Length: 110
Figure 1: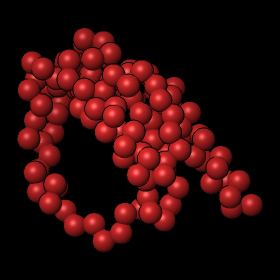
Figure 2: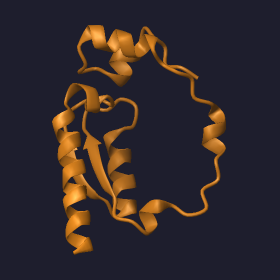
Figure 3: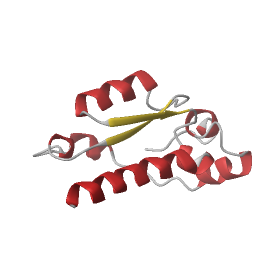
Figure 4: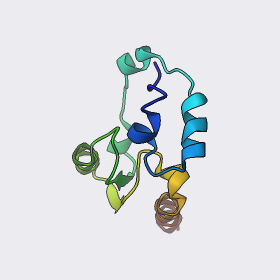
């Protein structure tokens, strides 16, 4: 399963520069639909702290769905404008969320 290469940038990487988005579209690797039928015996978010970066311009997972899943998981939530590929276009909010989680973990273990 692939995203249509001609629609990739608009759907997945709307805020990524055109050259990088084209490279991302061309370098996709398929993911199998079998992954959708995977069995989960215990969701990690039920026993571990969770953090979510709601990406407000995401066209792959609607922000309302991101917020719903975050609330259900009891996540610490940060929001940022950006596409689904925010880790490429604007990595700073992703880094900030990871740093926040690491600091919380370090504090909890002391």
